[in-house]
Length: 240
Image 1 (cartoon, rainbow, N blue to C red):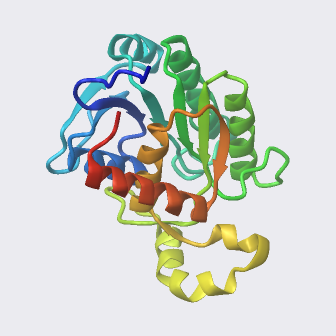
Image 2: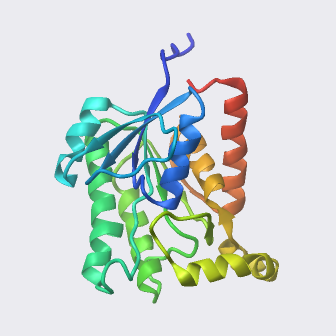
Image 3: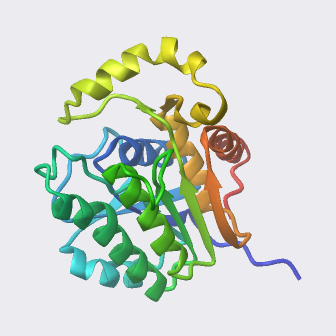
């Protein structure tokens, strides 16, 4: 007997709605009727024009109550800060990129959410000498132990896109230079090539709807394939 189809759009929870990928997730989901985003944040956040979604504002300790109430099909986590925003303080950086990400994952698992998609970074490695890459790698290892039916870890290279109220001059310079630099990155360096944030968002949405269990890591090329799957969904309208 086939599995009964759900009525109405699939609910997907999103944390990290203000970031480059998070905003694109909202825009993409709002353009169709297959998915409805349930955003969860610590404070009121400006939403993209035309956003169609539910937004809950609560302290992180209460996010589990929201997840338990809305029962989303999956959680997309685009949380993250920068060394500069963290005041160049390791504890403050870890508080967001490790502690908050893991706490949110634990709450989602307790609420019965089967799938999690997390935006990490190319080069994430728990043994890296780089604090940023080390914390990302440690977070991935911890998430793998939470016990989701399916965990998708995205490893984008340099994200291309326009950030709102977040000037990152070094990043902007790198994006401008990306068309020249990307072809020079080959072999193991190819994973660091730039990728459009919208494509990462498409991949996150497509992967959030998959039902096969397991732990999967996706580089730029794998995300492009998942993004094509999301676009096909938009054409067929078969999200269930």
